[in-house]
Amino acid sequence: MTDASSPRPPTSGPPDLAEQAHVFLSRLRHSRPPRADSGTAHPFLAGRDEGRGPREWRAQFRALHLLADHGPLTMQQLAQRLDVTPPTVTGIVKRLAEQELVERERDEDDSRVSWISISETGRAAVQAVHEDRRRAMEALFQQYTPEEQIEISRAIRIVERVLVDKAAPLLVDGEIVVSEPADDHCHGRHRR
Image (cartoon, rainbow, N blue to C red; front, side, top):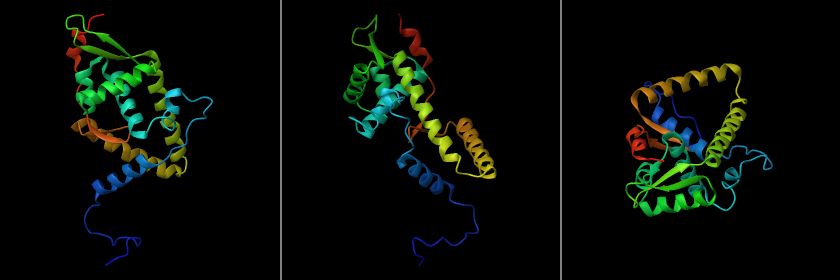
């Protein structure tokens, strides 16, 4: 029996990539990347560490990201894509609306339906999160030699190609989710 801290004996088969990816993504998700200077950070970024719990912040960011990528969605569509209950999505949207990150509009044909769209402030928040993550990843990868960076880049391109080709699960805000095609038909029903 080997000690958990000692290296595992080499195996003759391929490495357990699923386990390595799981461990890597778990470590990445739970790591605390460097934060932007508080004087220049978007207010939504400040909410990660102040006032809101990390789960609430992630849920709000996932909602913003979906709205940025897929355009206006009904409350029901947003709940389905976030895989949450309607009351949960109502709370998420309420908090985002209070921060002026989303806008609500009643459907012209069915007043029971609300369309949720991302505001310009919300788009700026999504962009700020992306920029913050990019800076954190740049700081992380600067620790590697140029040769290691080339290896990592090749590996990322291979994984990305497979994810795109196979519509495999994607990592969104540190959580693995299954990608869904955009509901282009929903935009036709939303009239302004």
